[in-house]
Image (cartoon, helix red, strand yellow):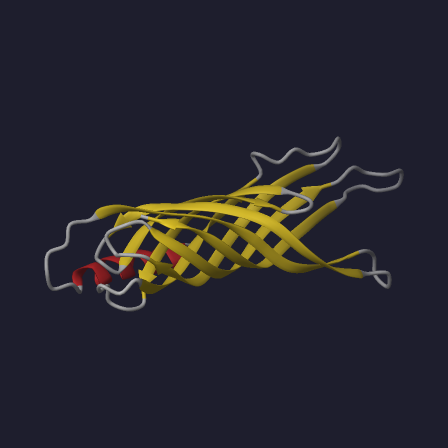
Length: 192
């Protein structure tokens, strides 16, 4: 996590200083909703089952455009997994891969990293779910005029960790489960 923050602290000023004309930083927002696609393996050794999963996800990125191509800020979201409802709060960056012009289609790269919290999750009696580290790199495009609202379509990979303590049965001392959600996310939304 420190390495990622160190990279952000070096990369952001370097990219912001590379511009030629003065640019006034402005607020930017990208709000999206979509689906998380993945597979899950569960069961005991020798009796494992693999199942496909599709889960709902929503997020909003709020930040500052440091130059016409780079925005940094925070991302807050909600991910509904079958066994948990997690709220990731991340530091994020959005970077246009081509210089902005009058064209209505712009391709961007994104990176969000932070921590997923289980504040909204409701556990059954005896269960305790907690969140964990999140990282989500992605690519997408915006359709619309540079100075107006835009339609956004994004494809990203999301890795989110979580842990769960489960109720104990007669001869068990501890029952702890570490979960790693590896998902492909497809999202649609708006940007301004």
